[in-house]
Image 1 (cartoon, helix red, strand yellow):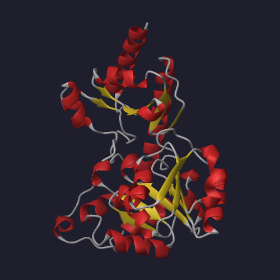
Image 2 (cartoon, helix red, strand yellow):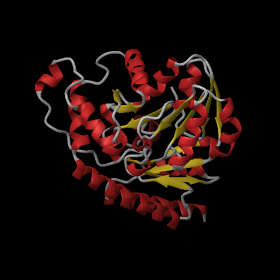
Image 3 (cartoon, helix red, strand yellow):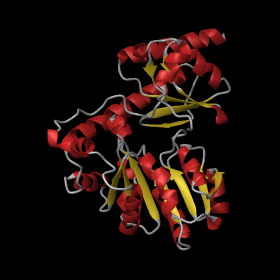
Image 4 (tube, one colour):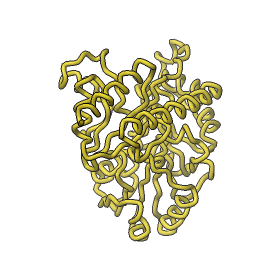
Length: 330
């Protein structure tokens, strides 16, 4: 398996610090979970059914008519490559590493490219994969640019796959608002914005025929009944969504100021994390871990991703640890 954030139990073993004593900033998951609704016993006892209201709630939330619930967008990332014959796939990198891995595992030829290389390679690709906003850099590409790329791919039967796992905080930037576009597939994560990654829920937005093929490949009853009930409640709770958007934006701005104050000005970020590139990234990650603060290290480009602290105690610990680090360097 590839390395990911959130491996708190491994950090417990590595550093000998009890799990309850950690500040886990290693993921891009909102640290404030939506409340769990009452779940009727029959949701646990019966096989889930598709006409329970979840799809309707998702259509309203995403503003898109054709949605497929999946057990986390990771399930779609691993399954979509199996819907095409072996071809040439570009992955706009750096990004969530499972995208390139999924296409390689399915037998496709994968080239990881940067933003400036897209124009050079796009007409030789069968599929282009983009994370928008990007993880871990926070880069946000315009709707116009993405639609132009999709048009060039689609004219040859190609796909543009856009992973919008971090788009909930800025829904105005979602391609879902453009309606059905041939060849365009949008992936949406549920757990990050709603702070409920453990329920394993995501959605695929795209053309009906493609969604039917994907559903057949994933198989029946992929999303559990309790998860469907919980997802529906969260997707309908507009007041809580507005509050979450405001709270995340405020915390992300505060995090950027905190990092800059300690000489670690972010090079990118979004409402759920800030991204810092520095030559001492690995050393700083270890320094913080020794103090019970877990952040995500990306060794390939000397980058650290800082998630949002949950409360004032976590903010104080991060501030103190970064102050200690500056003194350590001095």
